Image (cartoon, rainbow, N blue to C red):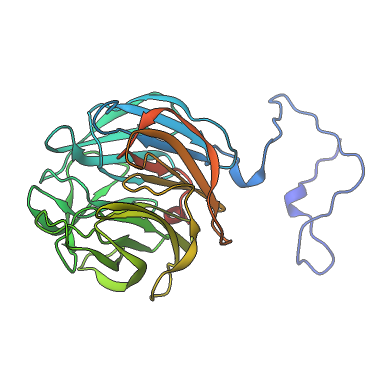
Length: 338
């Protein structure tokens, strides 16, 4: 029998390989498994995780499939109690750093998205911090500002694939707590929280950014459409960032803004959340941003979503497994992964 190599067959002008048409058969001893499901999410990159709460259920982890709608299911428990920490994620691992438990904490947890097995110890922050902004690209997680226990300008980073402590990245433009962050594959943007040294009257709308694989101080990006003491939640695909909700004493906000991450400039109005709330987490894939674990005046199980490339009001996604708030969230398909 003659043997030929199909990878060495070219069309007449050598610009491409063969076009196979008609009925094709396969013979082999190792078998073949055909892929299934939406091609955008093959390989498992469609999982959102939100974890922790205040004041109870502090170790609970919920998971969703972002491309579908429906109720969250239990993923396991965190290794450490926490609320309002700083999340980041690669395509395989989610990170939850710092937070409140009660008191400001320094420990860092990680989860493996494919496992469904709960959280593990990653290491510790050099300085215990809560209410900072977290974001990441495929390899590096960034934690910006927060209460530590005084309000800080510090920006720090970890290498997501390894364990251990954080390292110095640079400084933010101002010491603030209560912010939220998002990213593309090259740039991280964070909405500054308004609280400085505990003041309830210091509101802000400032956005700052860094280039994730460099080190250095943040640069002003622009402004949100409204001012807040606390930000709500943030998520992104590779080009557009979504900022949802917030708190301006004494009321919550339902405002959703969007930015184009590669440019600088002020945010624009996107639409509204299903209700007014702040202080939760955002999860995203290339098409959809999902928000969970925000505070609307009480614990709640609300999960909302928007289609990132459009504008319009958020739509109900489903319910968390229990009523929570001040949760942290990340996904294995967010905009920082490209």
